[in-house]
Amino acid sequence: MKNHCKNCNKFISKNKEYCSDNCKKEFNKKEILEIKCIICNKIIYKGTSKYEQKRKTCSMKCRDILKKQKKWEIRTCKVCENKFEARKITKKEMCSDECRKIWAAMPENKEYRLQRTKEELIKKYGVDATFKLESVQKKYKKF
Ligand SMILES: [Zn+2]
Ligand SMILES: [Zn+2]
Ligand SMILES: [Zn+2]
Image (cartoon, rainbow, N blue to C red; front, side, top):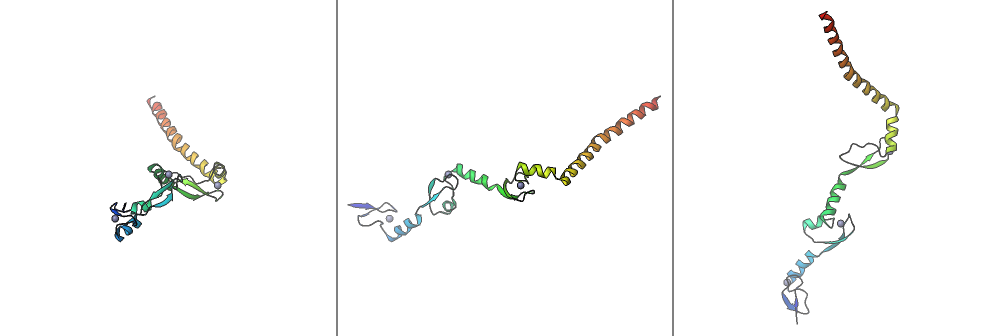
């Protein structure tokens, strides 16, 4: 009876697992590692190649989810100083709606906001009023 070499599939005598020591070494190198997908917990087998060593997920789908997760970061809430997770693309500074309300109700923030609205009003209606005044004066000159 003959047997297959575990590495190269060559026929060998039955009491051996590999045709040569080289094949034994090679096979051990290729040994598959069992890991869990860090997204869905599915068991996957990865090889020893550089790419496979870095692998943490079972599929492209899980890899995309992992990528998105990396875009989150830990921030400190400006109000309660709790740590919270926020997407890097957002400018979120408070951990919750509650804290956002507290922040907006803080006297210094309220005043700052009021001041800005006033300035904007002057910019908007101040210019508008001057323009109206000029056209009124021109009309008077005609008479
Ligand atoms: Zn072999
Ligand atoms: Zn997965
Ligand atoms: Zn907070």
